[in-house]
Image 1 (cartoon, protein in one colour):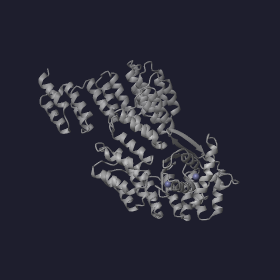
Image 2 (image 1 turned 135 degrees about the vertical axis):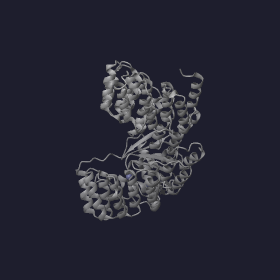
Image 3 (image 1 turned 30 degrees about the vertical axis):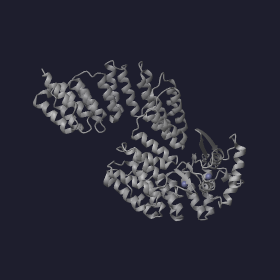
Image 4 (image 1 turned 180 degrees about the vertical axis):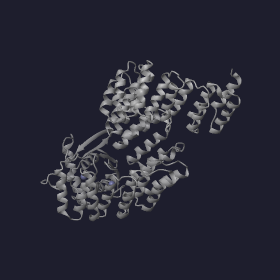
Amino acid sequence: MIRCDFTSKLFFLLDSCKSIHQIKQVHAQLITTGLIVHPIPTNKLLKLISSSRFAPISYAHMVFDHCPQPDLFLYNTIIKALALSTTSSADSFTRFRSLIREERLVPNQYSFAFVFKGCGNGVGVLEGEQVRVHAVKLGLENNLFVMNALIGMYVNLGFVVDARKVFDWSPNRDMYSWNIMLSGYARLGKMDEARQLFDEMPERDVVSWTTMISGCLQVGHFMEALDIFHNMLENGASPNEYTLASALAACANLVALDQGRWMHVYIKKNDIQMNERLLAGLIDMYAKCGELEFASKLFKSERQLKRKVWPWNAMVGGFAMHGKSKEAIEVFEQMKRERVSPNKVTFVALLNACSHGNRVEEGKCYFESMASHYGLEPELEHYGCLVDLLGRAGRLKEAEEIISNMPLTPDVVIWGALLSGCKIHKDVEMGERIGKIVKELDPNHLGCHVLLANIYSLTGNWNEARTLREKIAVSGKKKTPGCSSVELNGTFHQFLIGDRSHPQTKQLYLFLDEMAAKLKISGYIPESGEVLLDIDDNEDRETALLKHSEKLAIAFGLMNTAPGTPIRIVKNLRVCGDCHLAIKFISKVYDREIVVRDRIRYHHFKDGTCSCNDYW
Ligand code: ZN
Ligand code: ZN
């Protein structure tokens, strides 16, 4: 028998272990007292090791292997530990097999649930299905716990149809079953199926609502994400920090400051605990809505929430998108001093900052430090940033060399970055060459073809330009129509190119004419070089440019807001050169700050200049 008082002391010690060193001390006590042969203390030790951040999984294996007669509980503990580990989930299946074959123990619902978890974490679907056969044999196929784990396994591996079959057959379902199925659809971006299931749910909790909101976010349905968020509140459900972080991201993408601010107030009013993720969401939202100073103030004021990387990333990214490379670099250097480890997202933001600030040498150094200092292998996105950095600076040859020597296969985005460098620096020879590569890689890449056509136009090769444009038209690629929206008092107003559907159309077009006249007086000359193909040739190009959706949305914003109010626009396509120029003039003539989020990036216009420094 185990001596009770001594055992309980050891148990107490086990519970209070704070480091691997302390765990090992108690482990030694268990060995010297002989208690280690008993499954209960061993199980407790094993649980502690597997839940501890400090102990390696090999330690758990060793403790388990030294137990002379492991019982089912011990097996379940090791299977669970392995299933949840990022590196050894495969071993959970091996241990499960030896539980049955070598020990001849009968697995219970927990054994199945844990091994299914392991299978979903990377062991594989075939092994999972072998396990499933055992569950059926033992009559556990209708056990709620086991079924949920099986659905979870299929969902994790992306087999959403199989997951649905199990879900549909299952006679018992609880909230968890519905939520896991819902997340299966949402993760794959199958939002129609998710919506259907969501509507069928007998009841919903905060996880169900959050899954829907983040699913919409992932597929770019930002307005729908906000609609669901408001629905959630109307239904009396309380959002948590994950819900709010997703809803804030939707606001950031819609440049919807009014709603974003409302959420900030909601967080304060409802005493929702601020954490790093939520803080990052707020900083990102304010920065993207053009409130960079406020974002920076918020970042500085939350001294306690700087241990994790997210708020830092949001702040570096915020400065980068506003072209404030010096400030972005300062934040990164401060991050280094405070010993917060950067991740891959940090470097995308940092390299972008260098790119927009024309800081070539610093950018190159940071790029190299990724692998040498932080053990982060640069990915395609980082190479894209580096090529962009060199391309903008006119170091086209060097950029091309980087592409030729990189260990990953360059994609169309990277070549496209070089191509836009060729456009900026009017290098027709290289532009043509790179253009051909792009054409081969992706014959339908409209963006790059237009870029190449524009290179020809800029250098006066009208024939080449026309031939290419005709080709683009013939290839049957219909351009997505430009669409811009503006938020007024929490409501979105959308405009298409040449739109006449809005109730205020008449006033709007009168205002546009007046605006065109004012801009002309101030020195604005329409840039027609980039007017794209789908504009009818008979139409006056200047008029066509005037009707671009972002100009309509801005005019509408100017008409309906008090002088001095900033205007925020979202556009689904890249803003054209003429609109960019016109908006710069508008910001000066009307003395307004204008934030435009286009498909590529954020532009913050103020006093006749743009945060992108005309590179975008
Ligand atoms: Zn335009
Ligand atoms: Zn810009």
